[in-house]
Structures are given as C-alpha cells and as structure tokens.
Image: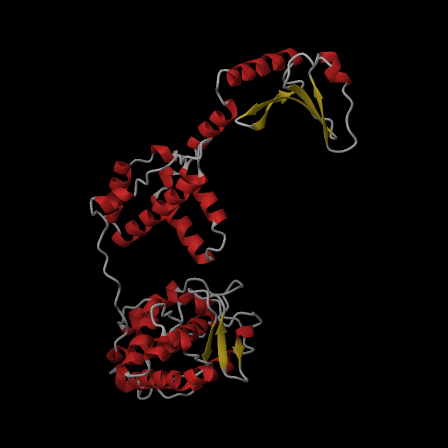
Length: 410
C-alpha cells in the first residue's frame, strides 16, 4: 500500500506485538503499529551489511507526507555513502557528561563496596561539583592540572584521591564509548598530565598510633566516656575497646552483628572485609566478657547500635571527648596500627599477625600453605590483649577498669 493519511488511519492494530505496513512506492519507508495502538513512521536500509532502522516520528506528530520526505532524505544520505544512524549515535556519545560517565561507571562496577561508592560520590560532589554537566571531551589537561594544584592547597591526599577517581572514569570511558568504526571517542586521559609532569603530591603514609605511655590516659578517658550514663557513650566506649583489642577496621567493627558472635566457640566473624575474604577471630577473655556484658542490652541486631536505629555511623562527638580528656590525639585507624605494632613487638609469628588483621600475602608462597584456624590464633590474640592491658595498667575485668586510676590521673 501507499502510506497515505487514510491508509495510516485505517491500518489494523495487532492483538499482540507489532506489525509493519510497508510503502510500495518508496522502498524502506514503513508504518509500525503496536498492540497498544501506537503508530510510528520508520525507514529501513541495509548499511554496511546490516539492516538499520530509524524511527522518524509518531503519526499525528508527523503527517504521512512529512514522514515520506524525511525517509527520502535519509535514503539519499545512505545512497551517497553516509551512515546517518551511526553518525547521530557518535554525536550523542561524544556529548556524554562527566556525571553520565560516572554513574555508568558505578553501574558497571556493581561489586564496589558501599563505603567506596559513598566516598566516590563525596569526591565528585566536593571537588568536581562544577564539572558534573561538562562534556568529557571538554575536560582538558590544563583544567585537571589546575584543579589538582588548587585543591592540593587544602588537602594534598584528597586532591590525589580525587584525580585517581577521575582517571578511573576516563579509563572506563575510553573502553565504553566508541564510534561506529569501533574507535574510542576518548583515547586520551587528561589526568595522565599529572604523571607526565610529575605533579602528583607526595603524601607520606600515616604512621600515627597510640604509644604505650599514652594508653593509661586513653583508657581512663574511655572509661570516663562509659560512665557518662548515656547509652550511646557506653556503646562507643565498648566499640573503641573492641577496635583496639582486635585491630578491626572502623567499618568492620560498626557492621558487627550478634549473629556474627559465637559465644560457644568464643569467636567473632567479619563477613564484609576490605579484601573480601571472611575473617574469623578468636575472642580474648577480655573481649568475651565485654560482649557478654553487652548481650541483651539492646534489641538491635547490631553489637554497636546507633541512637536512631541501625548501627553507629560516625562517633566524632565521643572521639573528641576522649581526645580532650586524655590529651591523646588519635583516629580510629590508629587503634588498628596500635594493635599491629604491639603484636609485632611481642615477636609473634608474622603469619599470625597478618592473619589476625586479615592482610593478604600475595607474594609469599609459603603463606598460601598455612591454615590459620581461630584456635591457632587464640594464643597470639590473648598475648596482644594482655600486653595492651598491661601497658594501660588495666585488669582484665569485664569493665576494663584501670588499676590505680587516681595515681595515673595525678
């Protein structure tokens, strides 16, 4: 049939799926009708051995004659050696923005940890806020170098991290976005400029920890926090002790649930670790008593519940109090470094220490043959705990109360 206004209006609607009514005067011009009653004009043509179809518009928005003229134009372009569909797709792809590429990057890398995604989003919002709607092709090497330099005046480590994220997004875009010939639309990564001109900031790895001589004051401040009478303060105090006596990372301790604690085998299990390998730790006598005391105090499934439900999130207020009262400046990760350092000072097996803190040993063939079950790790764990408590002048009671606290305070 010839696709006229009358023919289109009278085209039957299929019971399911879609049906095509092809124009018998202009080859490739057709009407597509769906079971929902939608009628759209399309044009089809074999291009580079593949049949490609372009939707011209819906009937009503386009008349049959308008659609026919568009189809003729399209077919004329193809006849002259052009590929209008691929060219349009290339143009659309070339205009991808940083925000669009970033969101697709997160979608493809769906295995990223929640904390990692949260930090990535924070970096994007904090450092690249004004670049979100900027097309990738318009982010230049000079812009990257200037943004890195300017933000480095505030935080060199943060500036480096932000540029590593931007570099990852561009590397992803290089493989993700291609033209119709299979060539990358973003062959160059502007962040590479920082390496070429050696502009990356040299950020020394943090090496702070709580010294043995500072442990008495630190424990005293934690005990003072517990004695405030506020359930949240008591929870944070116990959380700090757990991190110090296990070397767990902050999020590993925060996410700990009662289902992960085995009072029969005297172990705790950490499922969501940094290296994605579950960790089963033996409980020292002190930690066993601490968790036993906490058991049943709250209805939450979390060992350290937050004040508004769920788990604790960011105990900054309580940390500031402990720092102020003790005079010991520390971060939560410093507790992990303190645990590892004291363990190393006891001349324990390096394999035992690494297993306790769940560090991988990829280049150590022997490590791959060693099986460290919780019982083999129990003596080293107990030794580290006792060394920490001894340095702090503490007993191993369930309340972990420092001995001669008044003498330390004086």
